[in-house]
Image (cartoon, rainbow, N blue to C red):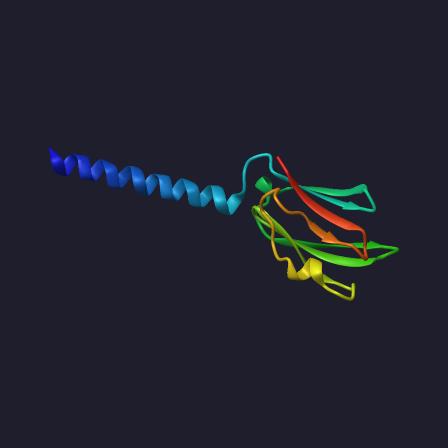
Length: 112
């Protein structure tokens, strides 16, 4: 009887770990990254629907930022601003702290 209990406990723990991994890798359903320039929405990306990583460049009168979109996350990988704070911030996958490039007036926020 004790072996059955241990078996089921291990099986349920493994299923929970696999589910959590899938959730973390692919983002939450409906999770979107909103890219804005100078307060105006430029592009919205559904992070839960991203199957393969891709890049796009935001070019404005203020300068350019190259953005990398991965399943469940987004980041600025290159920019022509002098301080590169937006690049140094790295990837975000939750709506806690947005990516901000002050010289280019670019903001990337995660919304549910």
